[in-house]
Image 1: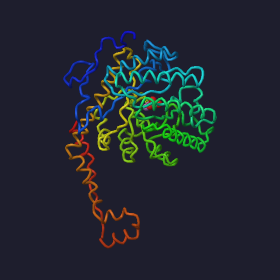
Image 2: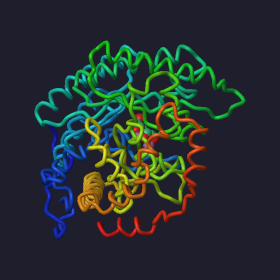
Image 3: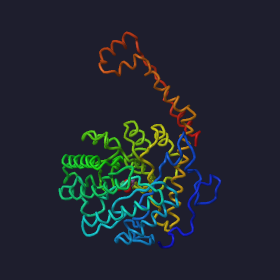
Image 4: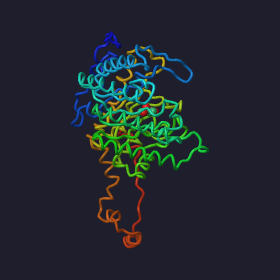
Length: 436
Ligand code: XLS
Ligand code: NI
Ligand code: NI
């Protein structure tokens, strides 16, 4: 192996909030217990392959800015890349990583070669995972970069593209299974449209439903125990993406009878693009039993793009962490840092600093949310708000067989006349801020 990419930077350790060392955790203390579980077990942080090792700092106006001692076009480059990737996972001490097939190996001349490359890298990963103890949070197929996917993968008007995508997913699901992946993700970046004038919505959605059903079948056939996750996003790169947000995906899954087979991987920046808050997506998915995993990042609120920046505001994440704690955590999901350093951040150390800051912010939000729950005032106020529903007469209205006529008769008989009560939003907001 060549000399370390990260030079003499030592494995990152928890040093506490007073530490002045930029390469130390100030809040993320992996072994620290929070509400009965370690921080590492609550957060299950992952490094993503694509932003750190596949992206070279290009933007739509500019050339690569990063110097990386590997390439994406040869297997030699892929092996060098994997060495640095595992150097980074272990330097950070993050327990997980995530990848697209195309991030880790070149496509080669055809699908067979792509499959062979991936199988070879799967063996390399298996060995490195065994040596380091790093695990796979999820694998996924890149069904959006190659020009063949420009009009969609499963939703493509050309059935040959559908077939190609199916074969590609089969390969990556096999690899993920072999590596003991905890989940498998489907993000439909090109499953949408640019214009309705050339698009048959009914056909395309039927194709997507069939495709996902076959992925579910195959998962069971090979005995993959991980969770299948769909990652919603409303747009970008397409003008409109079918997997718009958590609610839309849930409706889609129900339509194809898949809502007990597939969960959601929710990304902070995607929630913002859908004009939701992140906690909206989290709370809604959790209420439906659909919250599987998280892509942690943030968007620039002015730019209107999916800027995939590292989380940097603990206060903003507390409500999301509250709902995550309330559902008992995310496992087998986790916090995948689908975040990238800025194009001017060209030093290897910048990659570490992004992750250190990101996980510290999540850890601080976790602790604040745990205090909020342990103190009990917040949950007591929420329970009190709905206390009227504990009465038998209230419960009876929700039972099957209850009728509007009976309820109307009871309103008249008991002279029911509801008095407005404060929603106390400011009380909740002020209470939340006490735990920061
Ligand atoms: C893009 C998505 C993508 C998925 C994995 O916006 O976030 O990176 O997480 O395909
Ligand atoms: Ni993502
Ligand atoms: Ni994204």
